[in-house]
Image (cartoon, rainbow, N blue to C red; front, side, top):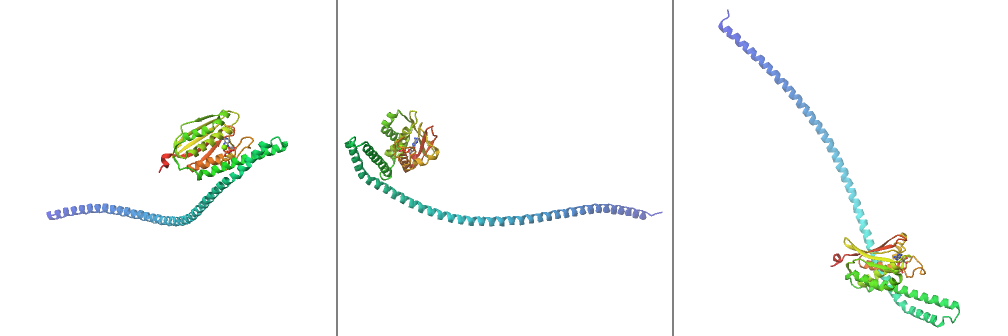
Amino acid sequence: MATALERSGVEELDRLKHRVATLEQLFEVYERTAIEQANKLEQLLEERKRAERELQKHKLHLEELVAARTAELRRANEQLKIDIAAREQAEQELALKAQELARSNADLEKFAYVASHDLQEPLRMVASYTQLLARRYKGKLDADADDFIGFAVDGANRMQQLIQDLLSYSRLTTRGKALELTETRRACDIAVKNLRRAIEESGAKVAVDDLPVVLGDVTQLSQLFQNLIGNGIKYCSDREPEVRVAAKTNGPEWIFSVRDNGIGIEPQYFERIFQMFQRLHTRKDYPGTGMGLAICRKIVERHGGSIWVESQPGHGSTFWFTIPRAERTQP
Ligand SMILES: Nc1ncnc2c1ncn2[C@@H]1O[C@H](COP(=O)(O)OP(=O)(O)O)[C@@H](O)[C@H]1O
Ligand SMILES: [Mg+2]
């Protein structure tokens, strides 16, 4: 018979056993979780290491890239310095050449002026005496003599015309007036008036659209219009000549056009016709000295513009020239 004490001891022991079992269970759970956590941690650590290794690799690559790029930039910079030096030298040489050119141009102009001016006097003498010979002895010597005298008169006249044109070319700069506000319409009207005879004889129609006010030299501008309109009338086909003068704005400049319905010009001559004494026709077909367009170009350039032609043989020509807009060039 167990005593009460023994019973309570056994009960106590059972409770203890139960507790130990519970603790063991708990411990097991803790242990499992701890292992899981440790595994996870290890995994994380591994991942981190891998990431660090990756990073290191990228860093190295980046450093290489930066080094390569820096070297490249340095090289480019050095090349640029060399290029700049070469360019500066080229610019200096160009400036020198421009100076030389300006001087030689000035010399040439002076020469053209002196030559044409001084040639005028003896030439006048030749011309007037050959004319006198022609008047006095025509029909009195033989037929050959008449021809010869005729050729001499013709040659002297032509030479006078050439020299006069050369002189007016060189006077464009020496006698050019200061540029002032000028109605180009007025310059054009003067030109048309001067061409009245040619217009009447050819039955030409000359139309002039609205024209602007520019900074210009009215005498030279009318000379410009006269040469261009005159050519438009002169180089006509069998149709009645029609010439139209117009102007439009284009940004900072005016673009003028003188359009005709004449014989036109082959593209390979578009540049050449603006040179002195360059003609595409014989005097028999169309009279002239070949100075007109050279004079036109010089006038346009003196006004700060440029001149060119567009044409199709058989379909007329358009001469274009620009002049800066007055409000832009005024001081
Ligand atoms: N409107 C035009 N149509 C066709 N040809 C032209 C025209 N204007 C000029 N030309 C050609 O350009 C040449 C040079 O013209 P220019 O300098 O005015 O000299 P010129 O009229 O005295 O011959 C002319 O001989 C002609 O052959
Ligand atoms: Mg001409």
